[in-house]
Structure formats: C-alpha cells, structure tokens
Length: 252
Image (cartoon, rainbow, N blue to C red; front, side, top):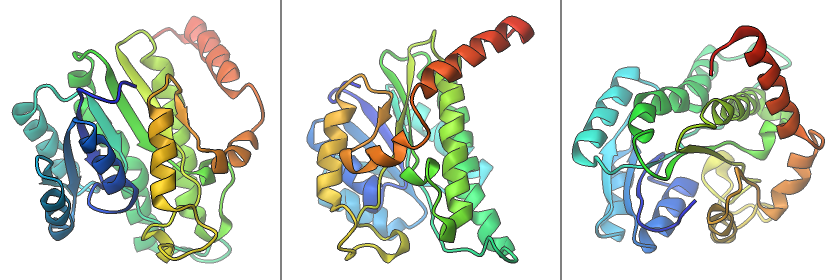
C-alpha cells in the first residue's frame, strides 16, 4: 500500500488502534476521515489533528452505514482507502447461556458492520487507482481466546471473509488487507495498563512499516506465532480450492 496521497476512511477512529492509525496516516499527508458513535471522541481526535475530518456512524445500523457511504462519496470522491476498524470485545460465557444483547451487538459490530461498510463503498473503490479495503481482525482469529468466544468467532469469520473477498477482487484494482493485532494497550478489555500487552505506539510503528509493503496480511512480530498456528500454505490452499470451485460453479 502506498502511504501517501490517499483519502482514507477509518471506522472506530475515535480511540485506540483506529485513532492511532488515523493519526499516523494523517502525519504522512493523507486526507483522513474518521467515524464512530462517540461524538466527543471524534471531536477530540480532529481537534488534535487539524485537517482531519469526522462523521458520526453507528456501524450496527445499515441505514447509518448507507448514509455515511453516500456522504463520503459526495464529499470525498477521491476516497480510495477504507479501513474497517470498529470493534467491541467483552467477556462471555460460551460454557453456559450467552447473553443475547452481547451476542447481537458483538456480531453486528465486528462482522456485519465491516461487511456492510465495504459493500456500501466497494463499487466506488473499484473506480480508484490503488483502492484498498482493510480489516482489523485479531490474533484470536487464528487462536481463539475462550473467555471471549463470541468476539474470537467474529474475528475468525472476518478473516475468512477477507480471504474470500481478496480472491474475488484479484482481477480488480482493489487490494484487501487484513491487520491482525496481538494484545495491544487499548481500551478493549481495559488493557491500557496491561504490562504484557504491546504498547500502542510500538504496534502502530511496526504496522505502518508493513502497510508500506505489498503484504496482504499485516502481522507484527508479536502476532506471528498465532498466525503460524493455522499451518503453512493457507493462501495457496484457499486460492487453489476456489479456482476449482469456479471451474465447477462459475462466477468471479
């Protein structure tokens, strides 16, 4: 991914990894628009970064997503990068009865939201040179954290979706990138002071260095043991499987 000259839209950009990514890209001279539900967080971010813009977005609401997409295309027709970063993480009880509100909100935010957001912008992104769709998944997409089983499942599903979309967009100008953070010091699970978590500034520095390459997956050193758990050759196997499927069923 080229690191300058982009117009970038980042969901969940008011705090944590989303804000840190937004600020890193902003410092490089990209036009950055962030989105989230907490207006005060958005206002704090844009006040600290003159030139950055923000729009309110409820990633769980399809109508809010469609409104945001229409606004972005109208106000920023040069938009070429979408970073789906919004997410929530709560402990759950997979060994017992799952709280319905937790289940619905986690799946709506972490899985349905990114799919819907990308769907709303994908035809626009196809018209751009250097189009990018990025998803922030997690190392728990590869090695689930049992105390957050629903969250882990949404990240595994997001990884699977990114693999499918990357394959289906292989002949277009749009690249699909997956960012898979390890445990990072953010608000998720009250991890800001966790000694074993990766400092946010270190994660962003390493992530930005990888974003500047042609890598489809952004996996920092601390995350590599988790990614390796699924075994070697996953991409070749996935692509070969899908080439055979296309021969059988057509499409793509």
